[in-house]
Every structure is written in C-alpha cells, then in structure tokens.
Image: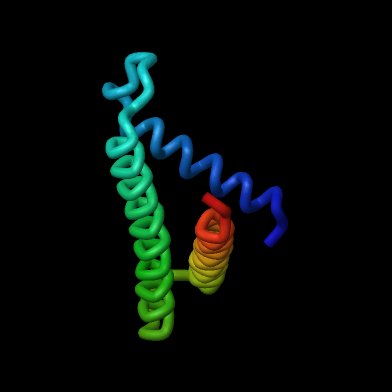
Length: 109
C-alpha cells in the first residue's frame, strides 16, 4: 500500500473525527482529554467499519456457496476485495501509529 493510500485513509479518519465532534467544534480547540476521546472513538468506528465489511463479505461468500440465486460471483469477489483492502489499510495505519509511538518514546526529555 502506497503512502498516498495511507494518507487517504488518514484523511478519511480525520473527516470522521470532525463529523463525530460536529457540534463540539464551535471554532475552539477541544481539550486534550476530549481530543484523545475523539481519536479513540474515530479509531473504534473505523475498526467497526472494517469488521462489518469483512462480515458482509463472509456472509455473501456463504450465501453464494449455498446456491443463493440473488448472489453473484462478482458480488462475492468485490466484497472480498473491499474487505481485504480495508484490512490492509487498517494494518498500515496500525503500523504507522506504532512507529510514531515508538519514535515518541525514544525522544529525549
């Protein structure tokens, strides 16, 4: 996954965070505790969306395997690719966060 794709995922997370804090942002900056709570909420929502995508993909695959006439192979493959891409993006974001955390912990105080 390229840095550009990672930046797109991070921008999406920022957009979700701004949406989640909607009425709280009257031009003033959130307190430090509030910012970390917003970040945690945004991260949790993002992980939930990836989980939902993976579950939907698994459900479609099962329905196709059972012979459901309303589920096509293209739907199953597309859902599988979306789930895979979401998971890869999540892993890349986790790696970037871990790298940033380690860099901060190695800073001299």
